Length: 69
Image (spheres, rainbow, N blue to C red):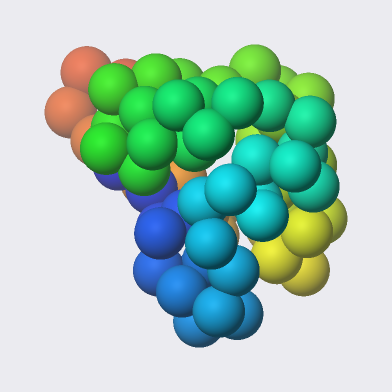
């Protein structure tokens, strides 16, 4: 799943380390999220949306087989 986490993070001038501390996850989790190698739990996705003051749908882009038909 693609996402806009890196874009939102850099817009706010937050480092990966700072973001990981705010979310209480490892920096490696942030790296994996930004690379699209890890899909977050619903709770983590909600925390990210709250932090960036947006909707979950604004952060995560569902493509291909992920969409409901």
